[in-house]
Structure formats: structure tokens, C-alpha cells
Amino acid sequence: MIFLISGPSGIGKNSVIKELQKDKKLNISLSVSYTTRDKRFNEINGKDYYFVNKNEFLEKIKKNEFLEYAQFVDNYYGTCKKEIERIINLNKNVLLEIETVGANNIFKQFLNNKQKIVSIFIVPIKIEDLKKRLENRNTNSKEDIKKRFDLSLKEIEERKKFDYIVCNDKLENAIFLIKKILNYEISLKN
Ligand code: 5GP
Image (cartoon, rainbow, N blue to C red; front, side, top):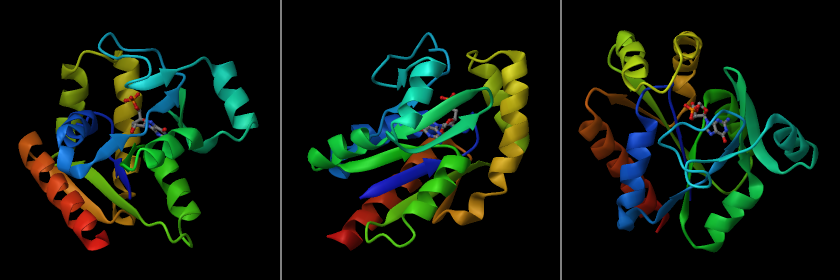
């Protein structure tokens, strides 16, 4: 199965995903995306992202290597077709963590496809919480935080296109709910 998780920057997608991957029952693996953004101090190349420069990314677009890609703030992000194949070959469920332009692109591609995508959008309980979270994580510049926050409002407008909307009032609650959703969807498929 393919699960897609989206939501504004700073909502806690990474923390949710780390927990989902630890849950052996879900048998899920994150599709590691390519990005042109700089690596953060706490990130590992090949685990969090494949970090490439803009030319390398553009070359991959030219070679049609991406299932989807999008520009987010000042950088490119993309899902490689080979990465999905790798996970499917391991007999595992695929987890995509992408922003809304890429998500819409995926929805279009899978509209008439037998393979169903289960999509989840995470929202904050209060919009101001997002700014605080972005500021507190100490990984983004002031300018970047502003751009991400401004984009968040647009992204949240897209929430109804997703199968499930989960509110991250508390991280443990969001993780609990998302695990329930995944288990439920997996049980329908079996
Ligand atoms: P960040 O810079 O915070 O790691 O990611 C910025 C945004 O890009 C997040 O909303 C994240 O979900 C999204 N993103 C990560 N990988 C991909 C991808 O492969 N494709 C698209 N479209 N968005 C992605």
C-alpha cells in the first residue's frame, strides 16, 4: 500500500514518521526524497534525504526519474520512481512525506490506478503553534520561517483533498490516531 502524509512545515511530520517506521506491524518504509536544500545538522544523507545540487536535480527531471517533484520555498523536492520500486520489492508498505503540490500531482496520477493511495493531512490546533514550532526547532533562518509559515496557510486550504485530517494537538495523540488509520486501512486490504 502507499500512504501519503502531508501537512504544513513544522507540524511534526518527521516525528510522526519516525514512530510509524519503528512499528514493525505496519511494515512501512519511508520513501527517501531528493532535495536541493542544505542538509541540517541532525540529518543524514540517504536516510532523511538524498541531498543533491540543483543541476543534479534538474538532470533527474530531464531523465524522467521522478514520480513527482515540486518547488517548496527556495528548493526542489522529489520522489524518485526507483525508490518506490525498491520499497515495493522489499514487500513493504510505502510512506510518502510530501507537500501539497506534490500530493496533488500524485492524486492525479493515481486517479484511475488500481493501486490506492491513502492520504493523511496533519493540521495544527492553532495556526500560531506552527510559527512557534518552526522557531523552536532552530534549524531555519528567520526569512525561511516566514516563507514556510506564509505557505502553510495555503497548504492548509488543501486539507479536504486528503482522505483523513488529523489534528496534532499533542504529538502522542497524532501518532496514536495515524497508527490507527494505517492499521485500519491495512486490515481492509488483507
Ligand atoms: P523540509 O525542508 O522541511 O524537509 O521539507 C519541506 C517540505 O517538502 C515538507 O512539506 C516536506 O513534506 C516536503 N517534501 C519532502 N520530500 C518531498 C518530495 O519528495 N516531494 C515533494 N513534493 N515534497 C516533499
